[in-house]
Length: 112
Image (cartoon, rainbow, N blue to C red; front, side, top):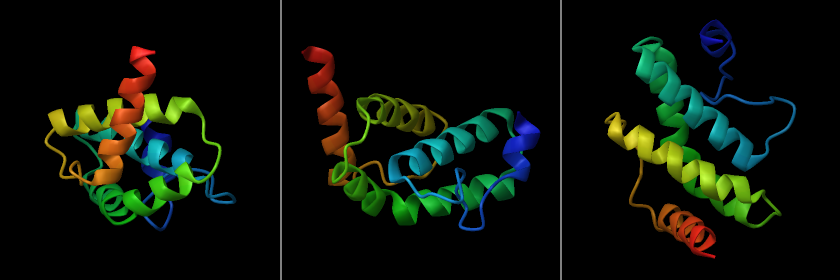
């Protein structure tokens, strides 16, 4: 699986289906791959390109995803992956209001 991750990063630094650009899928795939490679301490170039993609696209892609009928899974998985990334010391825009909004939606789902 790690070989696949290392060999299948898209030109923009993300991972996902290059024929379709579903915002929530692209964000989840990229964040999961960056976390996985970081845990294994490999693919520094891929990690840096993935982090750049996430830093420059997260806000817009979350806004786009919220405008569509995304799965509730995104609201659960994305904050969990962000928490893992933060524990690993990855520099991402954790304080964006849109990220706080997604975390709030997750917390609301958990409580209900």
